[in-house]
Image (cartoon, rainbow, N blue to C red; front, side):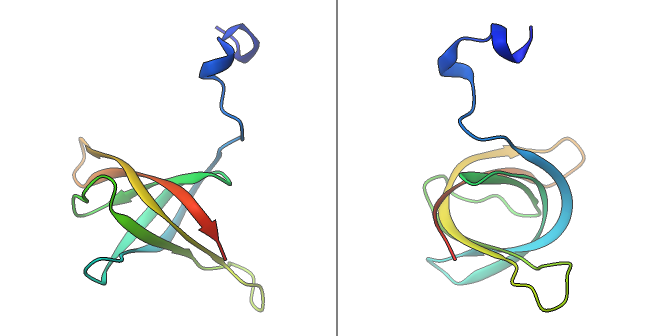
Length: 101
């Protein structure tokens, strides 16, 4: 099925960019930071691979450093919307952004 054949409700409002980059994900409630692998990114959220399970609806901050010296990286706050066990180990975490810095 092509993108145009899908029901409108199934289409994403924003395109996701596939990537493999190291980032940090901080759980705001307990100030614990995890080193994560960002797998995809859009302006509404991200999917990361994390070594620990996180609570859904928990507030987090995602920091992705810029690969270009002198340019600001991404800093975003949001909530965990999904936490699923990954076959190879770790957890796939879905984050919906509330704000970008």
